[in-house]
Image (cartoon, rainbow, N blue to C red):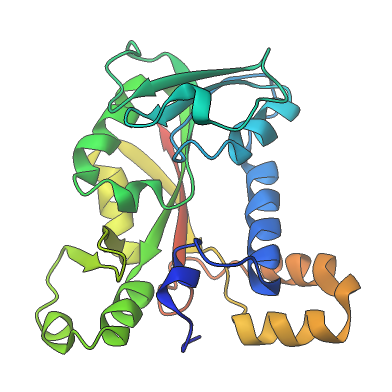
Length: 246
């Protein structure tokens, strides 16, 4: 996968063919995961609006939590305003127990929560019995690549159970193995349904195929979604997990 600049790996770089593919995969994964019946969904995915809009188009009511440091009037306009309610907050105290049917923590949301255990316990609290959570986190593969890119070899040798990774832009994220992600969810009282890499196809493969035939995107997405390499954390920059509250 490397060398790829760090700003590309955290999604802040230019949108090349691989990210077009990546977002198409993520969108189809969410389509398959969303409840079939109209539901109340909490979106913790950093206030980007993409996932809230997709859930709203599928007929769900969405509570989108915005970073309390960001003004509501600075967010992209809502196309489904009647189905999406935006709340600016830094925690979930505004929600009562067992008040939502599903929670989205997309766009590496739990990797940006350095105290992910506390955040996940709050997620479990607000979920109704039978409710589900979809979580995307940075993988250990990504963490080690970013450390190596910055020549932080000592950090690589000293990596313990919790891997906190400094990025070139000064931010810090938390990276997970599949076992650590399962543990995060289980310790919050959730039953893990599956953990898998978001993508297993490499950026070079995707770029090569799309350069040869731009119409191959749908084929690539189907190929990716049929792979289903559960618990394989040796590939992929991000891990995705689904869990349910008993």
